[in-house]
Length: 466
Image 1 (cartoon, rainbow, N blue to C red):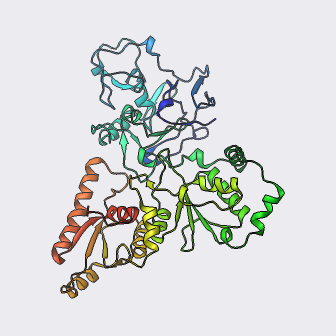
Image 2: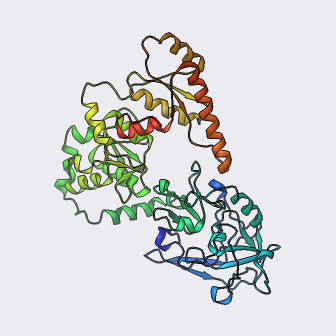
Image 3: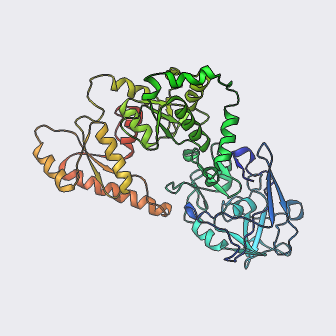
């Protein structure tokens, strides 16, 4: 069984890392972002109760080495974890383990300087470390990799655990991540989501069967009273209104997607998977703070003055068997802390005032992922801005417009490329900024990070340049 948990249950009764044999026929490892490997162990069984507290039942297989318990092994004086650099042992670190020549050393360890010393939790969650029998694999290479990565929490190197989202560059020491309330954990596959991406779905959450989804939807809507025959025919008889709705989901779970489609079939609305200009309602998933994920759909809906609502609006319509006013269910906050954008966008669209980026001209400098660049330019265009396609065109236009002085903006990508170390990340971003600044010195315009575009759209107002 699967268990996705928050911070409070993360290390409950998980004192043994799963073991994987180096057999091509039995190995079930799959590489994810930051080199995450999903380990599945035929010699252990995970059982989750209704509260997602974990019980780990180990087999009696003699081919699998089991670390000693805390009571069986005392930490050597001067022990410091090679990953998190902490000499302490807590619930979030687990006991100290000692390795030499690929084997765990449990007796006759005279000094921690002669062995590799690590916390049990640090090694459990290090992506590419696994056991072949009683031999540990990839420990030294993972220590070398982690030595180049700084923890986003404490700033020290040795951060082997990265966020599951491929584009995210956040890495953490395991104990540091454990102390962050908003991190989310997949206990079965040893995956972690950082606070920024906690609403992202883990692979196991995406792969639910339709039958299971239906059970979940039935459970979620069990408090809605059954509809009478008269009520069921109401939507079919109603003209206009709901039949003109075009619904678009944003970052919804499988259960929420199924509920949205079911609702659309009931009331005669249309559901589209991708953003289209005729969308009338974006229905978005929200976290416990009521914040939605900042997606392209949400940003385009803000610029278009369309409704951005929680799933509670869909449930309310089902319960009322008719259209329910949208205002009480309008989302006002996104996961980057920006508030008020959806309502401001609706009010802006209802007036004849110039659009958000009216008069601005944007040139995207340096390397952007092509699809992401297209999305940025679509946002710029929808907000009334103009894009400049080449450096030569930028120079030509700025020289020709010296008398009118329209605002030209050179935009550089402040997201580092995947797979780089902390030092490489810093160097790449400095180089991108330097290239953009060199260009603006030639033509006399403003340099901005690409996130300025997103922040302006999310707030539906111009924010200070960044």
